[in-house]
Image (cartoon, rainbow, N blue to C red; front, side, top):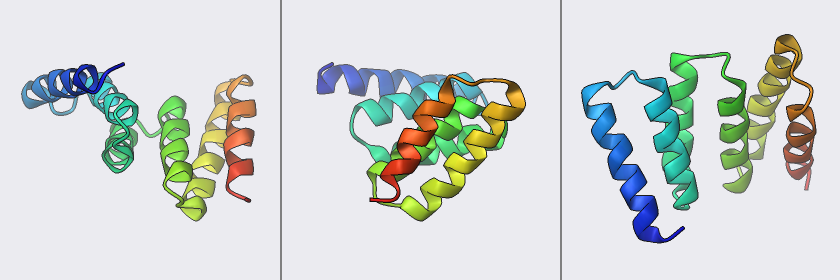
Length: 109
């Protein structure tokens, strides 16, 4: 994906959010576009907004945890990933537990 592609995705999501600021899927799309563009702080902020709109959105919690790990905020990442683990277990999702464990292991190094 080129920087222009990433920016086009960001712009598209921002236009949607101008009309429907509480659209969780558009907000998630914006967060992922920021992440793919390497704008991790912006991505983390949007993932947080997604969790405000839907506190039990496990995939968003994992994505936020990944951003926090990548930006060196490991204490906060541990908390977010612990919450993601609880969501996964509560929701009966076992597949994400491996990814969560891998991210948690990166918080120890």
